[in-house]
Length: 188
Image (cartoon, rainbow, N blue to C red; front, side):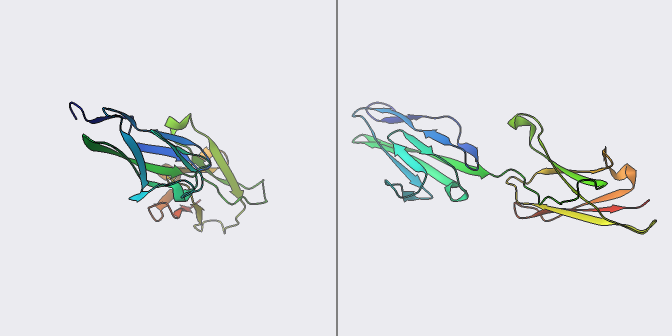
């Protein structure tokens, strides 16, 4: 806005933070007279102690120890006698993959969930489970993860990443954050 009004300067509108992480949203406003800043979450005015782990301090909103309920639409509204302006931020809480670990560490089958590369490289989570199958018969394996966003999954047998060229069929499970399952049919 021009003249004796209010104007905003922001970074990105989509923000991601890992569970238990911290995030600061900034709402840098200029205007004359000096604008007043208010923060809203999902359309409701944020007040002191209205949400655990969320603190507002004027032009900044701090989320500490992020939990799933912190996810949502945050809106910064700045006003003065000359006008009003606002900016929306969509905050997504990300959860790393966690698989139930089996007690048998000597199993021949393994599964790895790979973190996305833009978050500092691949990090593997590995589980193993021993299964017996009659020679020549197919076997079906599955896994579930509650990760947000859903992880990319790779199947391994004896340290070798499996593909359709190995005679396996990878079946995607349900899409969306809860749950992600993959099936494996392997024939020798």
